[in-house]
Length: 227
Image (cartoon, rainbow, N blue to C red; front, side, top):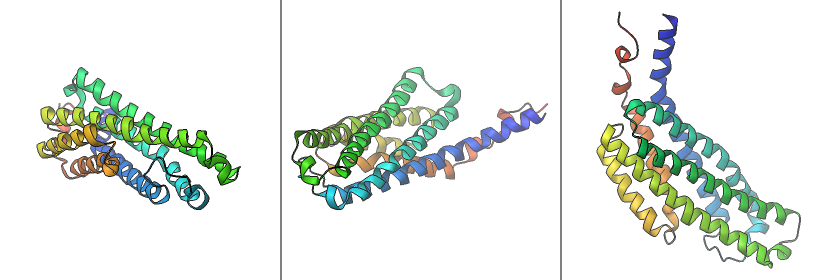
């Protein structure tokens, strides 16, 4: 009997855990992008003057990336748990795979910029800025985020929106909005600098819905035997 009660309580906490993780991810990623954008120019071919004045701000932004990634993976895990037997293998593979690739590419870009800041702290700005290594690292980080990470975010939004439509875990309007925003990411992410904020805002909407809509998860009869 205690085991059944524990199972019921754990299952009832699942939607809230997913929503809280999604909200934390959204806030951390938006804060990270804002800090990084205020510290580093959007132009990947800029001259690197920010290393002398804004390196600390950029470093703070980069330190938020691991925590945002952990919250995102938690959000994905609990969403999959909520889907349960409704989860389709094909969409589950694309859904989970694109989420992992997004986090991985985000970490890679953060590591590259973090290495640039670390090297700059042990050398004069001109020594680093005037090298091909700095220009390569800066351009590589820009491409990794604005091409590969954002494209994976678009694939994640498409697969999640499809799952939402067929299972009803989120309103249809959020799923349709996800398709539209994902299309923008897939086509114009390289040219639209603000596209990086699309995923966290969309995840925030889903998370708010999970907090508000609790009726689906308040059915203990489906988790325990009434007899």
